[in-house]
Length: 455
Image 1 (spheres, rainbow, N blue to C red):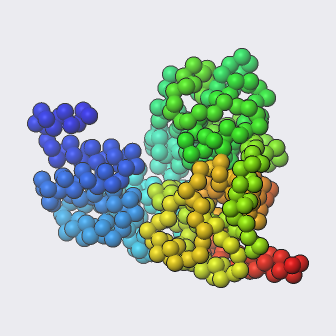
Image 2: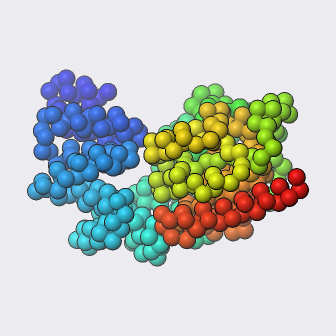
Image 3: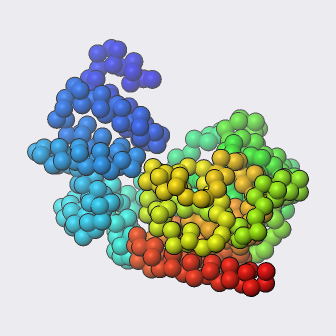
């Protein structure tokens, strides 16, 4: 709003459009960011900052073909700043030119040791390629220089959690959360104060998967607080309203809980209760039998009923590498099963194959309905998505397709396994799902053969 006013007063339009575009990048509205950068290019078609900002928005949008087009234009420009090298390296990486991408950023970081963004980008390339020690050292060194940088706080906390240093990891995670806090800013974070006769709001900080996975800690919070309010995104509200603890549940941002004494995110509950992470609790969600029976009639089949989720949010952490291209599962689809799609969005790369397949689409249901569907399935196969966490929390047999460089939760935190009914199939090489697909096919065939034997 202020930038638009500045333009009316005659302030440099090029600068204003670039800044607004970057605001939209922070808001993760990459298409809108692209619009502003393209508008800016009409003013000056060779502005290196605009071109590289545009490339950045296209990479984040996962429009690599279009990003490549502007990268060629950027290559011809005389000015080469950190965004240029980061963009170039990431595009090379997505084209599977890993060594070239790594070399570009290594060379840049040698000359610019204190550049935060370039070091972060290089550390991600290292971890994806299995050079974990290099990645950790890079972040550790740059973090020492900038201990108050929020992004570095968050990445360093994730690294500590990967290594099993939960005490320091959660402490640092909470520090990063509090630095960027804009969720009910007048309500203080709960830091362990007594909660007798107090009200606390537990809210979704990251994704739905976090809210579902760490919801088991509500059992422990309930022991010390009688007035717990939950705020989560709308698609999950009905599911959480079925909680057996009778907690009050509201849509995120509804402002109904502004009178609370404290607040805490679902992930931050680990700071107090992570030692109970492997203890078995009752099922938090109680799905009405009527809803379960409704779906039992709809998806009635004598075949083995398999729920399927192969990709998550296109703009999620470490995507597209933690999702699997649908046609790479065709060997599994050759088996005599009834497959049900549980994810809402179908990426462009998968649409044609999906439309030609016999997979039943159920992904347009809310999470309460999806939970009832899962209760009627024999098995759920999923990449690291909220569906994996929902299915595992419901104690349905779940096969997790886990990438080579997964999130912190699949490292030491998952030792021993967080979920009792989850079987992990993990990549042994970056971006190579062949072994995973082979093992899933083999194990699924055993189940089908056994089922057919008894029939």
